[in-house]
Structures are given as C-alpha cells and as structure tokens.
Image (tube, rainbow, N blue to C red; front, top):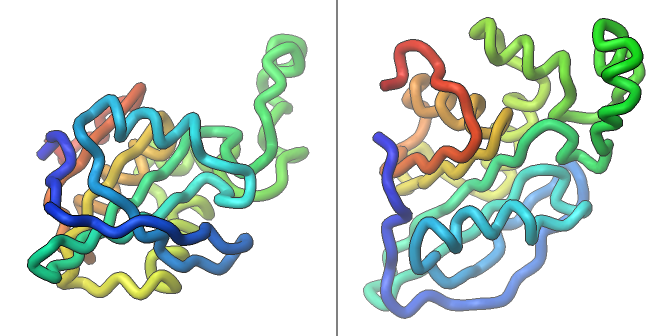
Length: 173
C-alpha cells in the first residue's frame, strides 16, 4: 500500500550515515507528513550513496525503520543529460560505476534483481533490520521501483510505501 509515514511519538534524534557499504541507522524523529518524506531525498548527502536508513524509536520503546531509496545518479555519479542526448544507447551502460545507474533502471523495470537492489538489501542487513521490524520504504524514481520490488518479495514487515516520480511495477498495486 502507498501511504504517509507511520509516526511514533517521542522519537530520538542524532546519528550519522556511515561510509559506503556500511550502514548504521540514524536515529531520527518521525516525518510529519509526505512533505518531510520527500524532503529527505534532497537532504541526502553523498556519503549516504543513495540510501538513508532512519531508526525511529517511540516513547513506548517500539522501533520502526524508514528506508529512503534515491533515484538514478544518487550514488555520487550525476546524470549528464547532454551526454545522454548525444548518444543515449551508450551512456550509462558502460561508463557508470556504483549503484543507481541506467543499467540498473532497465534491470529493475524488467523484473530482474539489480546491483542497486542488492546494495539496499546489504545496507538494511548491516543496519540490523530484521524481517519482523516494521519498515517504511520511501522511494524516488529508480528507488521507488526498488521499494516496490522489495515490498513484493515480502522479506520485511513493510508497513508503508511512499513513492515519488516512480513508475508502477506490475503486481505491486
């Protein structure tokens, strides 16, 4: 289902993102609404490599996670639209490094597991998210495709999914 973030009263603040390939969940306040969820994508730093994981602890001690998954170019490799216009078939298939690239867009759209999807799963595992922890996915563009795919796989206790600028993945309605 697609909805706004579930909120937990009395959340704690602070934390840091960690370096690429490692991830500790940042302690955070729950978002106040969809505007706050969307803002997280523009606030995401290059050290987060396209994935931000926030741990929200309520006053009752319950823990929830919000996994923000950004779009193409989010791994510190900006999209060069002029280069795409010059040669759209070559750009992004051979000269991109990291995750959240154009070949991962195609893989995800075709229902294949992409390197970006594996990277998100790795980050979630390293953050200590278990299959029973409540998780909200927030995805922008390619990140939304990944969020839908991960929800469809039912590996995690997904409570909410927020998508921005994302095509619908068949079977996830």
